[in-house]
Length: 120
Image (cartoon, rainbow, N blue to C red; front, top):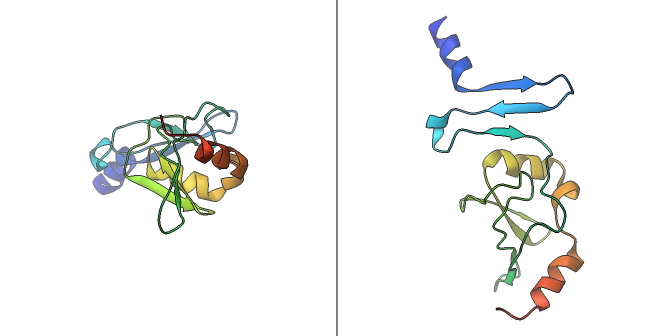
């Protein structure tokens, strides 16, 4: 019983009245304690990017804001999708992105336009 209670205090999921799923993770798991609302994309056009094409052909997006949550990118959570390396605030956002990349991924035209801009 004590083990079950401990497990419940470390990680749980809440489904709100309007069907949103919120998850709370243990703050002792190596990252800050925060609520995570699934599929809450950063507003379109609000994410500043500085893409750089690597020698291997992958484009590092160099986004400072997570495209899923709108929070600061952690610097340790990344995912390559269609040749673009996206940064995220946490592993949960990587998971959400990969479940529905069409909701969050930037269109190629936006990436190409940013690549064409001279570095400041």
